[in-house]
Length: 171
Image (cartoon, rainbow, N blue to C red):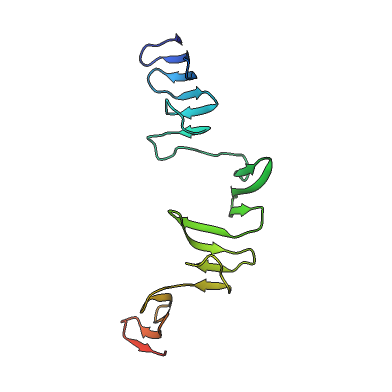
């Protein structure tokens, strides 16, 4: 172990080499501000669990900043797969290859956008511009509402109501 300025509150550079790992720590003593361990980099952690591991007690853990239209690009084996970009007027999430785009909760696809622009809610293969799937008796697949009426479309019925929720069943 090699260490420079190892007193609390002072900057530190520490180099450690053991039979299991090589590690360089840079920062204020005891904070592990930047750790290079093997082929991984940790910021705010002593033991990075991925190529880049950021651990922050602050809600803003990563900031991407650029002078013009910042973005994050995703590349797999040298091939651009997509990006997330923010401009002064728009935001983009783009994938470069064909195939559906999914929004997930846990490991379950909740919303799918197909290559042709069809959107599926609770289906991964939307057959129309908007394809909403609901299951179970009495379940409502779609509610359309304005300031005077509601229309509920479900598996077993189509209902219309005023905002007092007094429904007339059409089907």
